[in-house]
Length: 116
Image 1: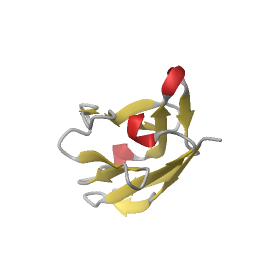
Image 2 (image 1 turned 90 degrees about the vertical axis):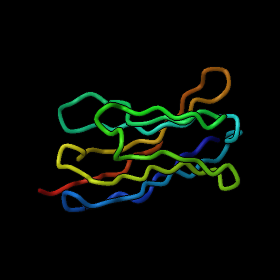
Image 3 (image 1 turned 90 degrees about the horizontal axis):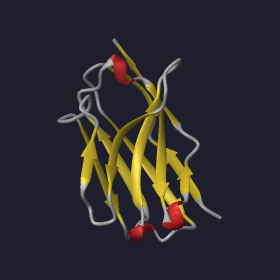
């Protein structure tokens, strides 16, 4: 059974930082592309950042230079370091795993709220 468990969300003032974690189980983590997505109220879910099994990263333009995605294959965990947070970053953040056979798995989400 695949599980993705996010943690690290919370309330922070604009300009602050948070680090999200996503612990994965039930997949061959080292061979799996991982990503962070977010969904704000009334909006569609959008890509924030992805990291391939080989470590290549991709970011949404809105977070480039502020957010960093990383992975620790020994801990089966992917991270999202978020700096210089803005009120528009407020959303539920979801971890996603793109596993073998085109299977996609999602975590339950963690709320990030940035106050102005």
